[in-house]
Length: 348
Image (cartoon, rainbow, N blue to C red; front, side, top):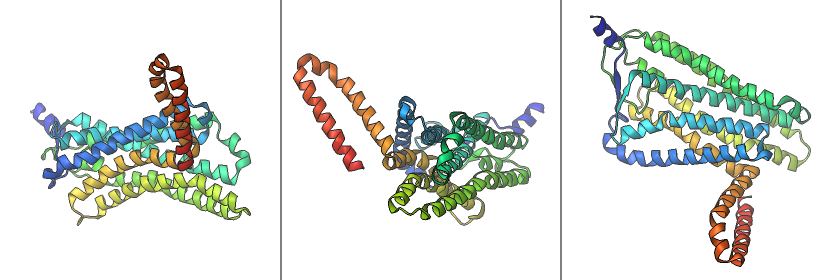
């Protein structure tokens, strides 16, 4: 009897169905998902490598960007591999504890990324509105504390959800019409009152990313007010340019996330596969686009990335070429240099 009660309280595993009703399209859906995930991995790893290895990029804005890249890697890697496994019918089963772990790290990285975006907005506010105090406000120790605060805040918000889910009895079916585990998706499989889970999820969403987006909005209002007070048009354009990439990242991150959140709770007439698609977009689209946006918008990152790529290619090609013809090596170096100059000019 005790074993039966334990089984009913905590099922051994859940069965993920993916996008219910679109099973015939799973293979086709996996193609863009896989390509976007590979692009997210490459983009964020390259961004991290360039920022870590290039000392000239050890500045507050770029250190925040490195934190954002790490959060993006955790966010996408927590969900997409299992989603691809479901699409390819390799393994649709996930254990109860693995499901809780996946849910925890998915929401943890999302809240951490929201906190980092808020810190980046404050960074831009100080850089534009109080430039003389920027170096004293954003020291390396302060940036490290902000990173630790982002992790601590995310942990404190998400840790209670593990106990809120473990206390529920799961005596219904163990089939989850989703590609990965999320808080309310697990709670709805319970055969008990889940009001506490609903209200806790709603409150934490409003008090963490909800408050963040409000404070980010306030900071940008103050930034725009300071920018329009500048007398020089060039200074105005430069100030707007420093914030444009961050503004694009904010829109990319929050738009699908909040749209998914509100349709999940209030859009009862929206088809379920649309909910699942939106839930996958907000964990995959920002990690893929963030490195692209910052590389295209930021001249320093663009130049350093091209320089590192050229150096790697040069080290691979130089030994063989040097042995055959030193003159050819010198010509190759000139060609590569000229090609990079042309690429940089077009990109700028």
